[in-house]
Image (cartoon, rainbow, N blue to C red; front, side, top):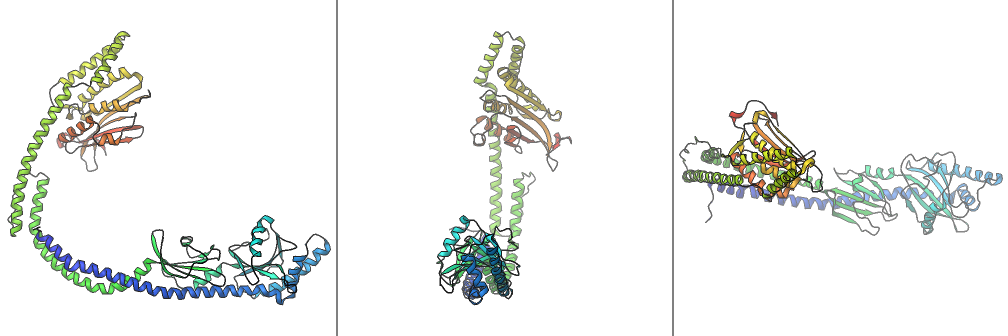
Length: 599
């Protein structure tokens, strides 16, 4: 049978009797009210969309009546007939007749535009016979009729679309067809409505009337309703082009098709947020209205409703919480003593005393077992440490007796070559430094000072420079404050040898090796010895360094951590140096003298 502690059992009872029912009921209420509110929004938003669609239909229907003014006004009808059947040229008689017709047309049309709503900006006529590709436009309150001759290639697609219209049908353009005319002033955004005009007597088509309306007709519709926070409204032209949007974020985020049926509450994603789409289409002209309600608005309303009910549950949970805390406080007296003992043991406190007597039987058994366990762990750690030190000493002695055969072979070949060339200076230099290396490795002792270790590395690099000549440059610097700081013998040599073996470029280019050892201080004043071995040769491979692919690096890391458990070892890149090996060793209090560079 699985056993549980007294404290965990109390937590389970508290969670099972109070917290879990509270969470379950909260979720049930949230989903229930969310469903009810969403269902209510379907009805209210359908009414809202119907109001917008009806007002839009009324505004467009009111504008459409201007297309029929030529039926009742001879001046307008006469102008349409004249420009459709008479080419306007520079002759005096032709131009005079056009000016007479345009004057009556301007006067009559201004009378109608003056009484129109503020959204009406102007009207114009597009003939299909004479003066084809010419636009005759009169702006509201305008003093003259603008004649704009557009390029035939620009007007051909428009004529093709207009020819498909039957009498009484209209066509919408999202902008102005007068764009590009120098005399036309574009002060604010407009859209264009075009309608066919027929000859009254011949019953034949003589052109198309177009009317420009300000796009504020759409924004005025939105002012008549109140949108919840985060909600949006998008109105589309019949061809799917956006006519108006409360936020450009919503444009293009919903699929629009001409045969799309009425939609109420379709769930969609816009960016990272969830919205409910309500869609309705105006039947006469084909405008579509998209109303997007954020899910957060529905959840907010549902949360307000649930909050009242959940507040009673919260009071009950609060009472249960105080009861539980009173019981937990009694348990913490016993657990506190056990945790204090464990913390002192973790910090290797030699003055760690026996735990005080426990009043609860279970905790008394735990404290006794814990004491026995820590004593056994201490013995095992001591034996493990002694075994590790003996192992490292054996590895060090093996390193003393080992010289890399490949390195030794290259050195001997270099010395032989120097002897043949009778380069006595470099030959003596090589022999002296090789003897220094053998003398250093044969000396007894597990530790050595940083200064002596660096001199050994310098001898190694001198021999390598005899081989590589100008391809190898090196720099060694040791702060005088830490020259006598003791480190494991031959700790740095594998790192420098690894830099030569894996960092020297194979294409014959140069490489620079830098070894710096200096004293630094952390932000809280602790002193460290920082040893950096860097080279600008072939960059190191992280997998080979950190996954144990290189035995020398693994050995250095293990010897460093056993001798100095609080030390750090890592590889990185710094500026021109593409391989930088760092060793950070904490100094004992007795070795600090107040100097050093701050980290």
